[in-house]
Every structure is written in C-alpha cells, then in structure tokens.
Image (cartoon, rainbow, N blue to C red; front, side, top):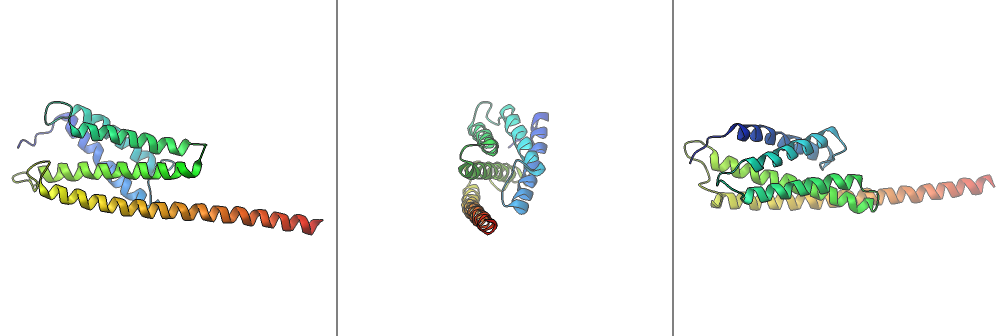
Length: 183
C-alpha cells in the first residue's frame, strides 16, 4: 500500500488536523461548536478548506465515497452556520445549528480515524482497508459517543430555553408589581 502524499494531500492533511483540536476546544468550553466565537470560526474555516481540498485527492482516481462525505460535511457546515443567522424560529435554529456542527465533527473523526488506522504504522497499518473490522468497531464507538453528545446538547439547550422563559415571566411579574405599587 503506497503512503505517498501529494503536495495537495500534505496541505489537506495539515489543514484538516486543526479542526480536530478546535472542535474539541469548543466542546470543552461551550459544550458545542459555536460559529460566533473565534474557535467556532476557525473550526468552520479549516473544515471548509479541508472538505474542499478533499475533492482534489483520490486513492481510486475518481469520485468516491470520501467525496460524498465531504459534500455532506459542507452541507452540515452550511446548515450550522445558517442556523446562527436565522431570525425566524430561533429556538429550532439553535438545535439545527448545534446538531449540524456536531455531526460535521463526527464525520471529521470518521475521516481521521480511517486515514490514521489505514496508514499507521507505516510498515504494517492497523487496518488493512476501508472495510476492516477494527474500523467498523471504531465507527460504532464514534456513533455512540455522538448520540451521547447530542443528547447532552439537547438537554442543555432545553434547559437554557426554560431558564429564559422563567426569567421573562419573572420580568413581567416584577414590572406588573412595580406598576401596581406606583399606582
């Protein structure tokens, strides 16, 4: 198995490593990737560059499943970014944006683990090919982790919305009390 990387492949790999750390930092700091922060903006930019440069790379010489996943990643990034700009249905948009960007991170981890395990160690890679049993196990583990993350995110978003409703109700009550007291 040849492990030669073209200059585009080297650039793609170098850029694609960055969102692994940016995404992890975003999850640690905020529990999600927020494109309104500098970490979130960096994540979006490096993911987009990595996804676009993937179209110039092909082990098989043509359009392949990796390219389909790159298209899906670009769609998820677009949905996640667009959701932050949504004026209508802001609560739904928060779920869509959060889940879309989390799903893009899942795809990044699928790409990363696949490429790493099929290339390293150089003399005898851990996975013999894209359909190696170890990769299936890793992908299943990533899916379980992803489902746990979005369940946690859904819970925190719901709790945040409930707090906002309670604060709005409290504000209405205090305004009414102040008005009645002044009258």
